[in-house]
Structure formats: C-alpha cells, structure tokens
Length: 195
Image (cartoon, rainbow, N blue to C red; front, side, top):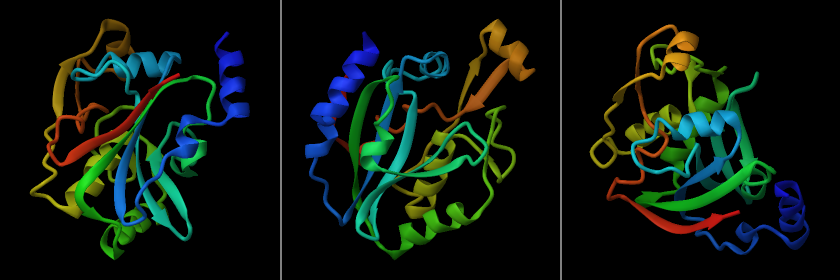
C-alpha cells in the first residue's frame, strides 16, 4: 500500500515540488521514515515522534542542495531538494527557516569544509572523533560555527534500551536528538507534510 502511495506521489509530483524557498535564506529539512532505523531514532527524540533525519538546505550553484550525514560508505551526502524526500519509506517531511541566517560565503565555506573531509557515520553516536558524525551532530556543529550565541545546543543523556545498549556496548547515550532544533526560537516551521 505504501509503495503504491509513493508511486502516486512521484507521478503526481511531490508536495515539495511547489515549495518556494528564498535563495538568500538557509533551511533545515526534516524527514521521518517507517524503517527500523527510523523507528529506533524517533524513540530517542525529545518530543517529536515524526522526525528521524535532518539536513541543511541552501541555494548553491543554481540549485537548492541538502547537505546531510547518512549511514552509508560515503556518509556526507549532497542531494537536491526533491531527492531528499524521494524515498518510499518516508512518511513525514518538514522545512524550517533559520531566522536571521543568510545564505552567504560564511555558511557556504563551513559546509564546503565538511564536504572536503572524509566523514564517516558515527555508529556509536559518541561525537568523540571529528571524522565520525551523525546527522544531528553535523547540523549542530555547522550552526555553532554560523552563530554560537543563537545556536546553543546541549547533548542529552538517555538510558539505552537493553537491545541498543548491547549493540552500542554502553548503557547511556550522550547525543544530540534529531528533534533538538525544533524548540530553538531561531527556527520557524515553513511547511510540513504527512505522506
């Protein structure tokens, strides 16, 4: 059934196709999936039960690109806006504007620095090594470099469920939940969709 809905959305166009974003602004894009990984991630959010992934979106070289960290060999991923949401497992999407953040040389240089590094997905969610990151950690680090006053985020500490503690070989997770950004007063939700 979900596969059929996905193909209908693709053939009819995504709700994000008609989205008009400002080339001078910067956005956070969120998505949520019903995959096993997505369900596990959502269980460690602070309050939002829909979000399982986040990326930074800005206009570069004629396109809105989404920069994000994913769990695969080449972890730093750059996608166009439509591709970020083109997955049959996606059940939620939202776009948030970073208030007062301009799409300028500073943020482009910060993103380019990450793009040029060999970043690997941080399977332990420890945040201890610069070359190992997960999606929300990447966004936190970029936003801190953009404006460390506006964007102050504190890691959360949560007891792991027994199965996850066994896999990660630790009892507590000290991490940035993927929904940590949604309560920041410098972000404004532009649109959200449920698929």
